[in-house]
Image 1: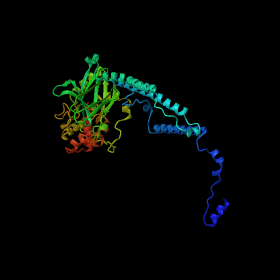
Image 2: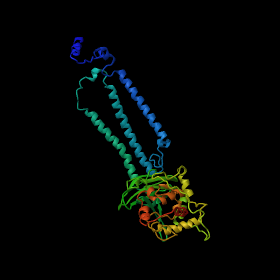
Image 3: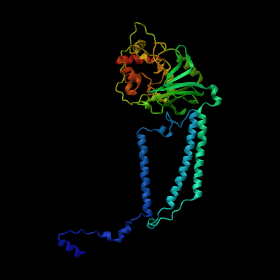
Image 4: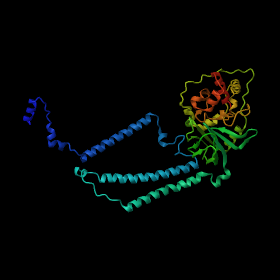
Length: 453
């Protein structure tokens, strides 16, 4: 080796000496080319430590980003796990059965896979380089057994599924004598509810917008229609999704176990503002529901101002820097929305009669009455637009997107295009009729609309 190196140097070439360790067999003994049992165990422990650290990091991230226990309990406003009616309950039972069956399949298959992986693992270098065993074509008994088990699993899921389909299809025969009928019509992007049993002389059936009030403990059959594109009616805690298809009648039924306030929304993509096409369902006891019907059937509330009265304030300083997707309701409202709804039925004790009168004049001067109905105040409007006769008694505006308070109402009136892009109030009304509103106009209109209890 030394003579070879010397000859190379004489020729002007450099020779790179190979480290001795590569020719030392003791190096291979210390660093074997195949993993040993201890190496495999150390690798497994390392992976487990990494998984544990990842889980802790994920949990910490969830807490830091605002996830609370409601996330883990899955009992949010539109939860399908915590239900309040027989229809939703039957659908939840099908979900649980499906989960139990698939969990059993996962445990069995996963256990077999884990056992075979551990039992027939390579235990030495010889095992790793051994020839593959003789291949067979399977075991007919095992294959037939797996097919039978699969069919059995499908039957277990199919029985409660068919029962739920039959149950949710229409009101049970024993309850049909007590059913309450409501018609729901979808528009881009809001819902109109019609009460055919509540006829108002000279006006037709009672109409409500985006907030459906129903009697608790009584089956309600809802006929579904769409006036433009395909929508989907969904109130998760009371019933599942049913499509609203143009030129085709559809229906669903539901029943609230007890008085409550429930969230819902359109569940079928229907255009620009599909994500903000929402609704509310308020279930009331028998007496409270009848009181609501009587109040809604009456004409719009009138606040009288003396001729000498002047508005206490020309305009209020409402915010004007709203972001497009900024939240539109308060924490206080979410704590007890049913009580908030009840509070909305009562007039404000500090309302400004002169400012309300000015808002009523502006509502007519700005041609708002050409689209919106206000029974008892002015002639005009169309059922193709939300009825505002009792808009002040609702907890939400803009199809359930914003809480109905003066600040959010001013936001909706001032910037309808930012709250709900593409809505007809902005496109047809503001742009089509060249409607311009000053801060003083907005304040007066807010006072007027808020007085309509």
